[in-house]
Figure 1 (cartoon, rainbow, N blue to C red):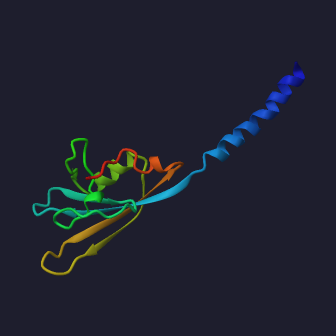
Figure 2: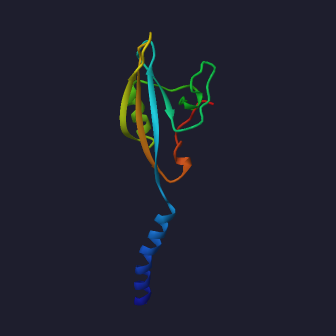
Figure 3: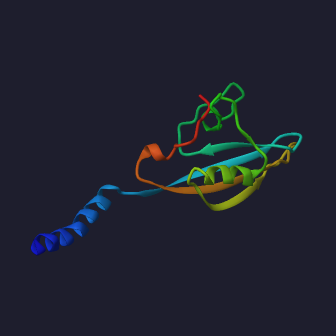
Length: 132
């Protein structure tokens, strides 16, 4: 009986190692781009996960607009509101940068790069809905 328990104790680390090999993880990235509206009260977010670009009737990236369960575009209070929303889904902030557009609008566009460790492609978009 002691030999059986000893063999079992020696085999447990082997099984545990074998399980970690099958669950290979990788780091994926997402860029969220935020632009304000005319009133300055809300921020529109587009998420770039590397998906195919689909334009809407106005030439915007329809496939990158985040929507709720009803299909309505989610508007965030600020970029930090969007980052916190993504953090709740497991994303981590890597770095940020801003680009000031030239011309009449002179609008600043904020870019936030996020990352997440996943073990399958389904985990990348878990919790996210995009406009169809």
